[in-house]
Image 1 (cartoon, rainbow, N blue to C red):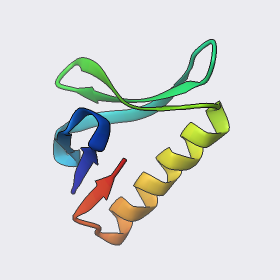
Image 2 (image 1 turned 120 degrees about the vertical axis):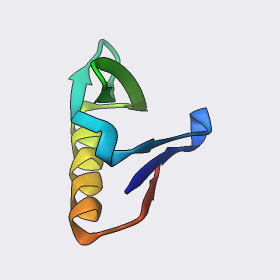
Image 3 (image 1 turned 180 degrees about the vertical axis):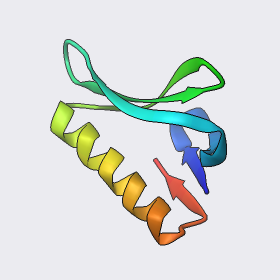
Length: 71
């Protein structure tokens, strides 16, 4: 499965992501992916609950076998 990030015009293969997580920032929360030891922000949300909901959505779609998720 691929995660396509429209704002960066980039796609990430879930097979290469070792970890997806939410990191709270001063004004919101970032959805981040760890790829080959490097951390990359793949989305930014106005609040931690929004970012956590998107992470949950990604995992549900991945389990359902979706070929692509667009952020």
